[in-house]
Length: 115
Image (cartoon, rainbow, N blue to C red; front, side):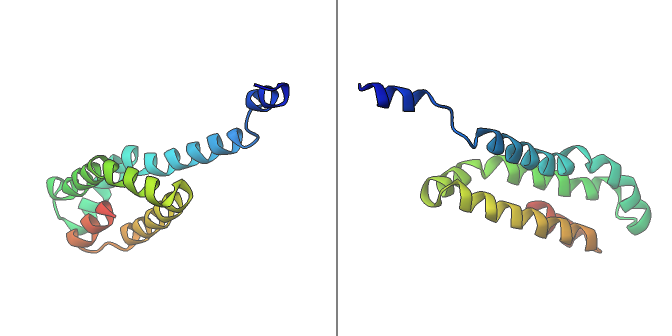
């Protein structure tokens, strides 16, 4: 190995900190759905009287979709690259948040949870 190749291989990537910040932002976006869910169950139940168990099904669907779709998401990353997958994921999260904010039926709440 030449001296120039060795020096290049040891230099850290200049965008690692940017990737870390973006990764943290993505985790914060998903954490809102995971950890903040319990804060919304009672107000939703008081407004629509659907019942806590019926509302919690939406969270169960969210967890199932989040975990069981990982192999498919990995295939998409391999096929299209991480940039495209993250961009589409961000759009889907924004769509889900918009649908959640307007959900007036259990079907719409559960659909947003799956998205």
